[in-house]
Image 1 (spheres, rainbow, N blue to C red):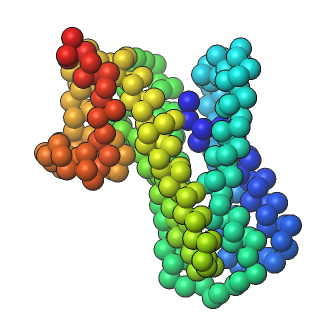
Image 2: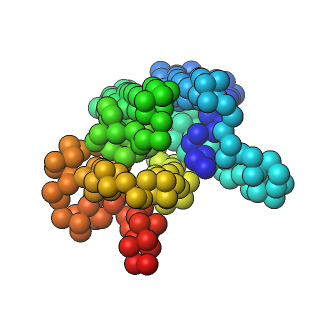
Image 3: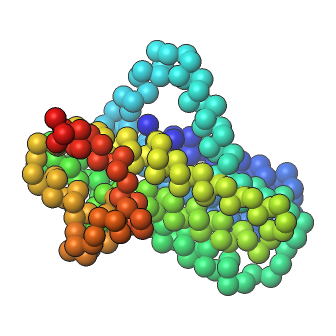
Length: 257
């Protein structure tokens, strides 16, 4: 289960609380608080729409019946929200208010690009799955032609944008807030995001040759034209484009048997 897909309202609450409690209301604080709140609101509304159309996420069923797993889930979610929000939390808690500079603008642009890709990817996949003609198929339309997980790319990119926009305020140990976007990136790459979805898709479509071709020619994260990605050497994909062996573990096991 992806922790990015739950608890988005907690980010909004934390963002507003840190802004209001400090009470400085500097321009940079207001902008970053608005950006994080808009991200959380968009995700919350999208998930609500998805639940109304598809029903409740069944991935929660097992957790509801296991108090231990449920407790671990909520504890980890609290850690996730707190850690990823570190750049904004430090900005809102700071007395420093340097003038807006290039890093602010670069961070804001990164956020705009990231949330645009994430929103487009989510909407395209929702429309794809809502079409009866696509039942039993994997989504390979729109931005999904260029990345197997464009929504996660947008997610990672926008949070790195929040970090970049926070850097004009940071001093000394405050630079440790970089752990926020690093934590999110590692979580999606190695734990809760891409590995689970890749394993699920491999299990479902492993016998479909078109799916194997899609996987061979489509970047796992960073959007790239298929004809470019498909012709890159395997070592380059692993080293620079996150085509990690764990994303094909299920297919590799099937081939070996």
